[in-house]
Image (tube, rainbow over all chains, first blue to last red; front, side):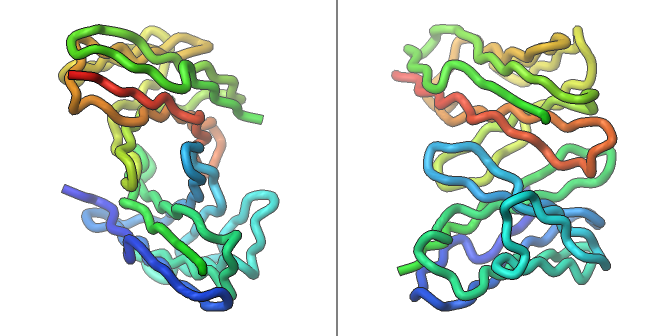
Length: 114
Length: 111
């Protein structure tokens, strides 16, 4: 069964709306989770590393004020896309895994901004 | 900078026609190389981790191998349900465990 749960699976909203995506580790505690973005027929691009109890680490070119990450507990990280615009439309995926385990991925969130 | 290149981009096979997918990588110290399967509209599903050159792992019709420069995913007698995008990723030693992905191979197995 799934070890990482991501919610919602699909969001359609108007431009200017802020959207929150949740990522939960179900069977284990994760001090670190990762957020990726995937464009159609492209690979996963790491956006940021979410660290429990501290600030997220963002990859070069990713706006931290646009993509707010909160990792308030060992089983939950959230990604909030603030004031979303059509160019933010994409497939967002989170992953989690303990130190000696492979990363397991959520089923992704399809975000469509009208 | 860590880099992963997968080939071919797309592969069409007849059911039962064995083949291999390639993953070439450059990394500043390899902690692990990972193979994932991704179905449309879903997140990647973990298949294998390889840690050192010469290592091999098998699962059903899939077998993954690793050298110092590349990894192969061998598919023996594939079935239509093996159709998916196969992603290769590397994890560098000393990193915060983030993965660098290749662009994937889209496999279609025809009945």
